[in-house]
Amino acid sequence: MKHLQNNGLELKFDRLANFRDVGGRSGYDGERMGLGLVFRSEELSKLSKEDINKIKRLGIKTICDFRTDAERKSKVSRLNEKHGINVITLSMNDKSREFTRKEFFRFLVMGTKEINFEDIMHDMYKYMAFQCNQELKQMIELLAHRENYPILIHCTGGKDRTGFMSAMLQLAIGINYEEVMADYLHSNNLIGPKMKKLENVLRWISLFRVSSARLRPVLEVRREYLQPVYEAIIQEYGTIENYLQTACGISTQTLKSMRALLLVSDDKIIKEEPYARIVLR
Image (cartoon, rainbow, N blue to C red; front, top):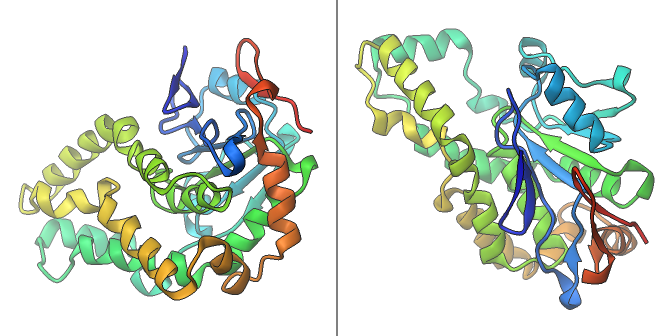
């Protein structure tokens, strides 16, 4: 089953949530970000055989995994080099705010008030915007070369690290900020039922000492997570392009090459069954 959501291709899987095409929206000079080029999702450890076959039919050549080493070891991806895919690990995590399982379990059992997940999420986005410049540079450099396409980017839930990187990519090719924000917030629609179940499990483990309100900040994406770092970037660098060039060290030619591959005119968009495709120029 498939359908278009917010101009991008969204596919349904047996055991994979928050998977969708990053493309389909208008960028510079009235051109659109092509479909079938960049996808985003949650982690890939629970894929069914049919899920794997669906992703294979998309022709994915490169996967960018933003998880930590510990995350990758605990939830091993079912898609890897054996499937003819180049897997690039670009860990994005502030170790100073990283919880061990023991610490999180203590939080659930004791219901301590020392942990504020909303503050943690704000700090996480600041860290990604101003401490993960090299990871952002590496991703964009991958996107500047035709042989790496199609590309799938993902983290654990596919909402924060993946959401931030997807937003920076879309902004880099001129997609309107409010469209980028709408796509970022769309994760809540795709993971909402799954996160609600997780919330209920965590509250049960805590014997209901921990309220839904305290857990929710880490189980969803919010405008107030992405917008402050976007505004901070614009305030300091003036434009996203200047941020990418100055803070991340990305060359003008790399950005130009990436845009040439990602942006296409409407008459170049070809819809094929079972998936939308694009002809690279």
